[in-house]
Image (cartoon, rainbow, N blue to C red; front, side, top):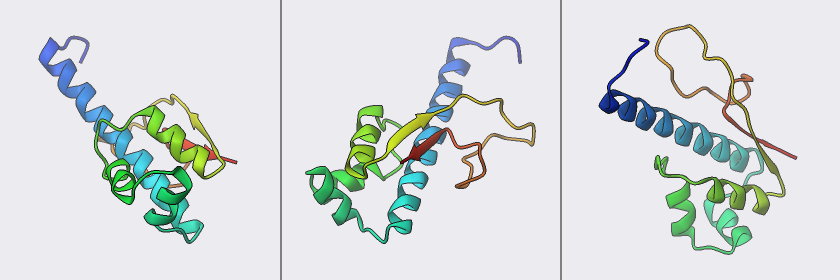
Length: 108
């Protein structure tokens, strides 16, 4: 749609933000699983409470880049953010791990 009202643009941005937050939290959860780490382990490495890690991993659309950077730092990883053309396979959704289309990728 070439033209959208301000309200439609805000709703689209809100949905996109929520989708990116879900992608990031799925990626972090996958990393913890691969490393056989708990949220409490991550909290200890980050120097924060387990409750704070739960907030970060809740999928809250207000997840910040600073929070992601803190997770990456604790896991001794970098974060790579890529802008990619959307797949033309229907509604956009969070992608699974490792399909090459993740918006957030944690790299060693």
